[in-house]
Length: 453
Image 1 (cartoon, rainbow, N blue to C red):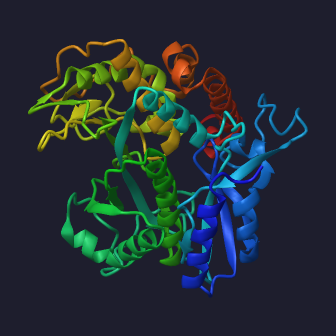
Image 2 (tube, rainbow, N blue to C red):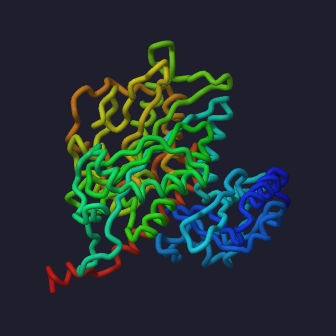
């Protein structure tokens, strides 16, 4: 089947190659359940063909493990003969990657098109949730905020990461939050990250040093195209990791890289507009009841959504409690950063909700899909979130599953998320993450020998 946007893609390719005649290769990128890219590298002459016809890659790539290996109990790629899925290039995603030994193009690919998409492609799951909003003539507006760590490229003798050294002083970085001096000392790598973002048409906002040594945050602007916002978040992760390599550093979005330091969060700001562009959460200078209903839905689905917001074993190390850590309670409030769902100060009626629960290791498509599904569930059922929390919250909520096995079991039983995100996908996702957790545990660490041998 021909690409439904082939003419637009061909125009983009013509403009790109005219502006970048030195480019001889391009990479095709698609995102798996773990939130990692997979794809292939091709000579640039293939671009026009793929724009017209698309390309084929194994469907099983979506459901491999973090290490790119098949998982027990996931039949795709094993029991089905490993068939191909038909991929289409994503219009507007062709751009330049500048961190390799030569400039290369890259372009995103998806199975989402006029023919049958893969129900377990994360991008398709988010598109399915957005379609549920569109059926009501509503359109979410979103912004992602990501924290990440820079560290030494080489690990220590025990295989652990080492604190990054300040490029200008040579000393290990210190945890000074919102320090302009730290941003200035790391300006070479940060400026290169921002330049790569510009080449890939990613609009960035505020830059801040965070609570951990080597930890930074670069924000994105609000986006009316939710799929593109999630695309950019995935691309940003790749940019940070690859640019850090250029500077002889490592970089990671792991939720809790060091037990003694702050974790990496993925905060999401969300509002919803109607067909006329009016914010459905605003009623003049006051919040519309729909905003509180959306938060009611987030609270109702939060236990089931945890496996999407915290998808790995390490993810749950971040939920340790305390006012400066990830929320561990079923709470909401106005201008309160210790709650799960915060209503920020609304300027000129810009009412929205901030989800502060997910870790930076979450798949952006799935973290957003689960969040929007919870909000839609709350609005449709007019759920009451209860009273806002005014004081700082430090204690854990006993109704919140804060380990991977309990979180996945809760997700598997939840009908609200299945109804909106897709029953088959949610059940496959739970099996996938459970299988990876089992594979992870099926390993004897050095500590077992140190303690029990």
